[in-house]
Image (cartoon, rainbow, N blue to C red; front, side, top):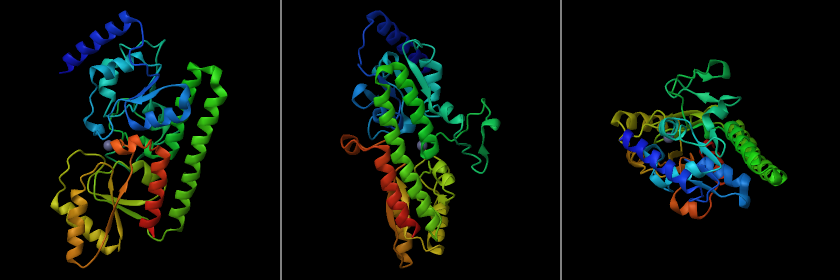
Amino acid sequence: MKKVLSLIIAVVFLFVVVSCKSKSNVDIVSTTYVGYDFSRNVAKDKMNSSMLLKPGEELHDYSPSVSDIEKILDSKIFIYIGGESDSEFVEKDILPEINKKKTTVINMMDVVKNGGHIYDEEDPESYISDETIDEEEEEYDEHIWNSLTNAKLIINAIYESIIKNDSSNKDYYLNNKDLYIEKIDKIDNNIKDVVNKANNKLIIFADRFPLLYFVKEYNLEYDAAFKGCETSKEANPLTIEKLTKKISDNNIKIIFTIELSEANIASAIVENLKKEGKNVLVKTFYTMHNVSKEDFEKNMTYVDYLNINLNSLKEALN
Ligand SMILES: [Zn+2]
């Protein structure tokens, strides 16, 4: 399969080089939603942005199509996470073929290694600072964008690449970037405020848990059906029992699932609690893995989702 992919990439590369003209007409290509959202909010109408993951698709099952590869090789700026979902195909098959004079590559994980936060999925208690990052280690939790500190670093890196490509519109991009970061800062302060005032600091995810960066940033306590983002959708009955007890003992009124989830575990927990005569509400907490088709058409932004999360958090912690 890998050989086939390499062959396809080689053929596409040849085609792009020989044809010498833009096929995709996309300036900024991102493997996933956040890179797309950040770049379109800085570049606005001066550059085209697109994401390769289709709306509604599972991020962790993504693999590139021929036209995706074409778009990457043809882009001015290419953004990828640099974690387990995209680094393998990018680093083995794309980077050796890319024309570095034409395309600036942004590895978001590399960006946050300088001044941002990185956590080890297997050992969330060990905060990894710049000094302790092991370049050979590949177990870092890749959901780095759920730290607002990291998100701002990534936006700044995207802005730097954009102005390198189009310095004549620097003021325009700077203004867009500053406005977007201002919105994020405002939400960041509001979240801090909500958490500071809350009596309860515990949030429960009846789902996968790609939010280690978020809970660490605000010192929230958490429990979840899965550690990190294991793609297994079936929860162990003991896990369901354990979470049900925790919700009941702590008098939790709202529990969370993540976007595009089938919410089987949440339904099982709701049923269990009903038997005890207790009601719990299930809400979606947006982790920005991807957007639904519907939200994509509505142009929902990272900031829009943060605002929804802020309101959900306010309800859940009170
Ligand atoms: Zn994930």
